Amino acid sequence: MRNVLVTGGSRGLGLGIARQLISAGYRVLAVARSHNSQLDEVRAQAEALNPGSFIFCPFDLAEIEKIPRFVSQLRKEHGPIYGLVNNAGISFEGVLAMMPTSQIEQLVRVNMLSPIVLTKYVVRSMMSQGEGRIVNVSSIMAFTGYNGLSVYGATKSSLLGFSRSLAREVGKLSIQVNSVAPGFVDTELTRSLGEEQRDKIARRSALRRLAEVEDVANAVEFLLSDKAKNITGTVITVDAGSTA
Image (cartoon, rainbow, N blue to C red):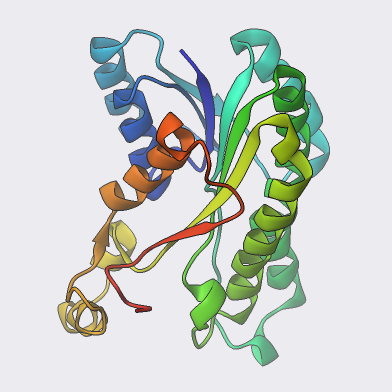
């Protein structure tokens, strides 16, 4: 089985991506700060489908200085890393003028610096193997903007530029780098919104609905697969046509 490292893999979109990749025959190394009951459920399903195909790897990605040792340990215990899905991220809502500098620094550290440094050490493994796939989970906020999310939007925009330039750097080594930009996705977070607000968001999209976790997970799986062997340096938008 090919190993795919999925960050933020304990809930929401990350867990949905993990489920999809397991069903596609990958071994998922799910990274998150803490364990939860949802992980136990996915592990049980994975063991029934393909024993050993789901491994939880507890780690706080905000601890940048520990990333090199973490990646080295993963390679030692589980072998080469074929795929990396940089999905983990945080968000603080608030106008820039009133946002504490500490929150700005935390957003940049977790959403931008951490995936770049993690990719640095994972891509070294891919370079030695002569193959690999990297998928960075951005957001439609990267190109539409949203009131109260300027710093979050900046971090997600950075992943697009990072992906395109890195694709140029490592393409000659058969390593592909792409991005996925979800819109508002039907998750626990959006379910916490009022029904009227959810309907308003859905009406703005071309398809008059919210995208689902499975839609984003399918896009990630496609970019990791042989079907995408000549796709690199691009972004797939999954938003039910919100930005059409």
